[in-house]
Image 1 (cartoon, one colour):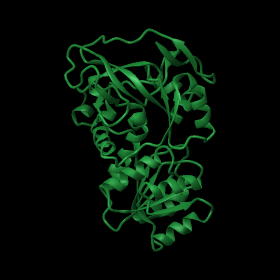
Image 2 (cartoon, rainbow, N blue to C red; image 1 turned 60 degrees about the vertical axis):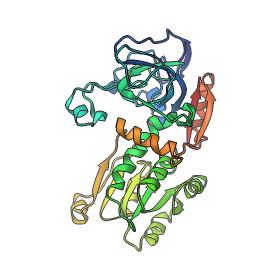
Image 3 (cartoon, rainbow, N blue to C red; image 1 turned 90 degrees about the vertical axis):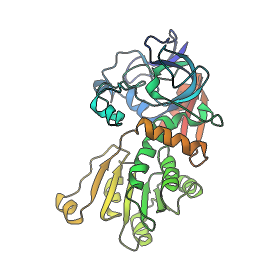
Image 4 (cartoon, rainbow, N blue to C red; image 1 turned 45 degrees about the horizontal axis):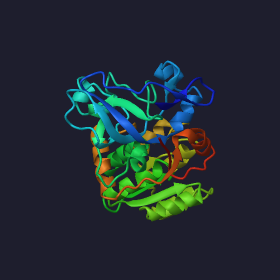
Length: 341
């Protein structure tokens, strides 16, 4: 089969032919890929940022946002059958460790991460586990939802956690309306009655945010902190969900957070520098957000089937993988780039 592989760090990906995977264990599921999301993490992988953490042996097939059709299954698989449309949770988990027993499979002690530490989905086929596949509504197409498997799942996970705190009349500030942010805005709109304020430096992203659920859109032009404070009566937002996490976003975000507010960190790249006396005197909380659980993905697919969360995509044939990477790196992608074998 065709596969796009990392052959060396600081080198371009290569298209190659590799053997197609087959079920080897009783719970294995082989998925015929219909769409594979191109994520900024893939760029970080090529830069070598994940080399030590993942410990993966090169060459290997990249791609951790995947959806398609069940192609083959192991003998003990009962939750899906050949031909089913599925989206693939980004982790392969054991189901037996303490975290899995609590339903917190994101922190599985034995997890594999296809596309990060084992072969992923920039290919025609992907081998995963019965524990990782979620059947999707027949009205949904794999290429249209693939990036919900990780980017969407991460955004939903943060939105779901934030929504538990938000009450009608509260304000929620979303920083960043790009690939993750535009999904998070829709999820927040579906889950909470809070007033949504969105800040982004790109005016087109702000316009998009207003069409998908934001109540207020603010362009980050140097006056945005003051604009947000004006919109919140000078108090700041009860919850900030930061999908950027770099370029000064965190220091500005904290200034727009209300006393006793929650600051959800989703995007990353810089340190949060806040005096501890300010944290205790205002009782603000900083909350980290990783990718969501299998159950989170099931809930997100329900919202997608209901039309409450839509992914804005740019699609590329598998052979044009380099164009997709280049466009993402140059900021030319609105929403998410998807490879379609």
